[in-house]
Image (tube, rainbow over all chains, first blue to last red; front, side, top):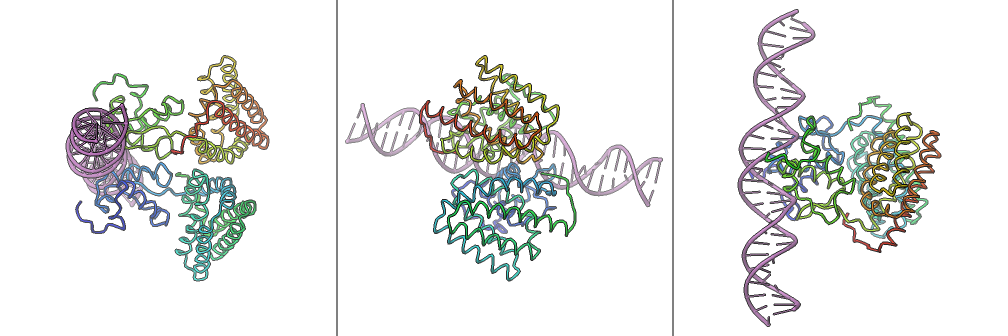
Length: 234
Length: 234
DNA sequence: AAACAAAATACAGTATACAGTTAGCCGGCG
DNA sequence: CGCCGGCTAACTGTATACTGTATTTTGTTT
C-alpha cells in the first residue's frame, strides 16, 4: 500500500476483485496499442505501479496469456509478435464468424445501438478527414462494440472480440496509410446502412467484404512497409 | 509434500510447471466427463490430492475458467450447467468453423493421420456394436484430434477443440441413445471417406451435415429426457 | 413448525517469503 | 579481437500465512 502515486484511473473500483481490475486496465492498454511489442511487462513492476502485491497482477497477466493477448517468458510477459501467417490465420477465422454475427446483429438491431453506430461512424469520418489516427481507432472500436452488443450469441461475440483485438496492434500500423483509412470508413458506412435497414443478408455480405478488404489492405501495407515475416510466436 | 499417496498419473512430469501439469490433468478429467456438474472443485482439496500447495492448482483452475471449462464461485469451482440456449450458441459457432477446418485438413491430409482416423473409426464402430459408450467417446476424441491435427491454422483448430469440449459433457448424455450413436458412426464414416479422398469440398459438406446432425440429435435426446432449460451459467 | 437472525465455516482473494531457472554479463582463454 | 564458460541478477514459479466474504448452520422467536 506504499503510495497511490502514479496509479492510473483504477484506485476507485470496489465490487470487483483486484485481479479483475488490473485485468481490465491492462486489457484496455493492450487494445489501444499502449504496450509496445518489445516492451516487457513484469509483474512486480506493475504491482508497484498499482500499489498491490504481485498476486492479483500475476493473475491478470496469466489470464491475458490464456486469452492470447500476451505470451509469458521466463523473463516477463510481452505482446506476441504476429507474423504474416498469424494474421492470415486470424483473418480466416474472422471471415468465417463475422458475417454470420453481423447478420444476427442486423436482425436484432435496436434504436440505441443504431444511434451509437451512427455516432461512431460520424466520429470516424471526422477523424479520417483530420488524419487523427488515434481517434479513428477509438471510433472504430466503438462501432464494433455497438454491433457486437446486439449479437445474441455471446460466445460468438466474445470470440470475435478476442480475435479482432489480437490483430489490433498490427492494424494500428496499417491505418497509417490514408487509402487504408478510406477503405475502412467506406466499409463502415456500408455496414451502417445495412444495420439501419435491419437486413441480415446485406449485413452479412458487407461484413464479408469488409473483412476481405481489411485483410487485403493489411498485406498491401505490410508489403510496402517491409516483408518482416516474423516467426510465429503465437 | 505430505504423502504422494493418491496422486494420479502425475508425479512424473518434469519439464513443465506444476500448474501446467495440474491443468493438463484437470482438462483431461473434464474432457472425459469425470467431473459431475454438481461437483465442487476446491483448490485446497485438489492441492492435497496432488501433494502441492494451493497456488499451482489455483492457477490451473483460473486458466480453466478463462477458457470456459469452469466457472468460479465464492465456494469452489464447478463445471457450467449449459442450458439449451448455450448449446445452441456453441453449435452455431461450430457450424461456422468446422466445415472450413475440415476442408483445410482434407487438403493437407497425411498418411499417418489417415491411419489414425481409420483406427479411431474402427474402434468407434466396435464400441458402437458393443454398446460401450466410454470407449466410443475416447475413439471419437481420437478421431477429432487426428483431423484437427492436420488443420494448418492452429488458432482455428484450438478454438474448435475448446467449443467441442464445452459440449462434451452434455454430449456424453446424448450418446446413451443408440440411434444417436448410429448417426455419429455414420457421420464419422462419411468424413473418413472424404478425408481419404483428400477432397476439401466433400469434407466440408460432410462436416456441415455432421454438425447439423449432432445438434439435432442433441435436442431430440434433450427433448426426450426432459426439457431442463437450465438458465445460462456460461 | 416455519421464518428469521446471528454466528460459524469454508472457501477464494491477497500478501509476503522463498526457490528455481534463465538470460545477460563479465572475464578468461584461444 | 572474438568465442566460450562460469557468475550474477532478474525474473517467474511455488509455498505459506492472512483476510474478507458468502453460504450454511444453528439457535431463537412467533
